[in-house]
Structures are given as C-alpha cells and as structure tokens.
Length: 295
Image 1: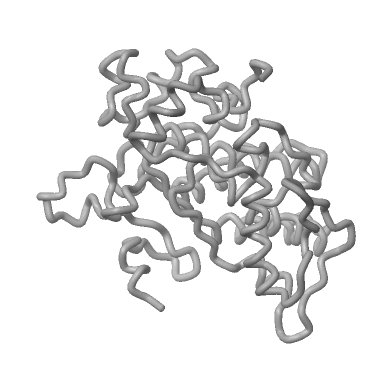
Image 2: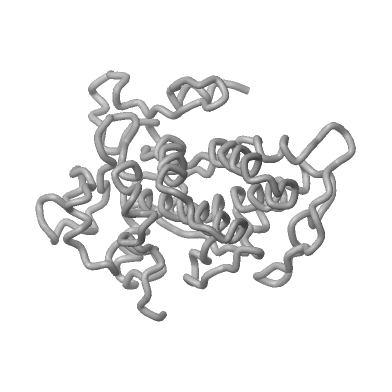
C-alpha cells in the first residue's frame, strides 16, 4: 500500500479541533491510550496515560493510522488482546441495507449489492407514503458498538483495504443521512441545521484510544468532505468546532463489558467512571447504562 496518510493529524480541520477531539466527556480529561501498542515509545504512551497534543506531536505521521497500514504482527497482537477485527465495507453495506430495507419498506434504497461490492442508486431516494419523511430518517438514532474506526458510521475508505471511497458511493449510516439532506435542500442554513441533527443522531463507542481518535477524525473529515462537495467552500473554524464538540460527546471511550471508562477501578462504585453521553433532543447529560434499560 502506498505510504500516504489516511489520517492527517496536521491537516487544518484536525489541528483546529484536536483539543476537542481528545476530550473524554466522562472524566473531564483526555481519552487514554488503552492499548500497549505504544509502550516502547516512553512513559507518556503507556496504556493508562492520556493522549495529549504534545504526545501526538512527537510521533511519526505514519504511526496513528488505520489498522490496514499496521504490520501483520501488530494486527495479530491487537486481535488476540482486544479482539480487534475490522469489517470490509461491502459487509457493512449489507448490514446497513437490512436496516434501511426495513425502514423504507423496499430493497435497494441506496444501492444494489454485487459480489463484495455495490452499485449506487442514481435516482433521488423515495420515501414511504405512510408518514415517513426525509427529516424523520435524518433524526433516527444509530449506534455502532465497539466501533473501531467507525466504518458503519462513515466510509471515507474501506477499512479492510484502505482504498478511498468516492463521496457519491459511500455507505455509512451518517453518509446516507448526508446524502438525503443533499437531495432535499439547497438552502445553506437549512442544510447546516439538518447536518447538525444528523451528527447528533449517530453514536459509537470504542475501547482503544488510538482507534477512537481515528474514528473521531473520520467523522470530522466526513463533514469537511460533504461541506466542500456541496458548497465548494471550506468550513469555518466555528463550524468545525461545532461538529467536533458533537463528536466528542457521541463517539466516546468505553469498555463495553462494564459501561465504564477503560481501566476504571471496578472496586470504586463511583458514578464518575460510568460513561456519560449527551441527549441532544432533551439537552441533558445521561449515563449510557440508563439507556440500555429502555425498550
């Protein structure tokens, strides 16, 4: 594979928002590495240490990159220790299609599946006649558990090959919402309003800090991609920060077995290590575990 950086830490959108992208909203600190992959680089890269702008600035640009760029030995180690296995985009597409087929009431809404690939539907997406609108679809809440680099949410590249995916052929759950918005409004204020709602509606959690940061960057850069594609302009710093703030709440670091921040002392029965997320509709912070008890 060509040695180009899929994840560009020094790009303007990432550098502008990196302080926010590193935030852990539960601990009010930064996310932690939560992996032994970088221990040999020094004390500040140990498993329980926070990821900081300073620690990232000292790394080679090819280190914090998607799984596909890592050595086979490193992939195997991460799979054994953390059960890290990433899903090819064509499989993600099939699974998301099952959800959309059910919601829309017909098959092939966004694309037609082919052998380990898909053919994007060219026509404007049609909505069911029974009280379902494009706005309803945009506001549907979607969660990717143990999200890794977030391939079910956004599909800037195929996580199993590293191949970039053209914006018109993307299949992530957020990508689909953004396509719907593009097809239904050309008013910039309305477009921005519904894009914000789309970002507020997608969630994901991940254990390892490097994967989480990559997921957050992928989602941020998805906003940049669609903004530039739609308006042929660069988003402002304020717009980037608004999206980064949403991402820092919605894509969070958690041990999915405990609903707590990774490496929390389970003997400490304290609320502050139980993961918090933001309910954007009710405008309040909630414990993630409280949502699991609801039907």
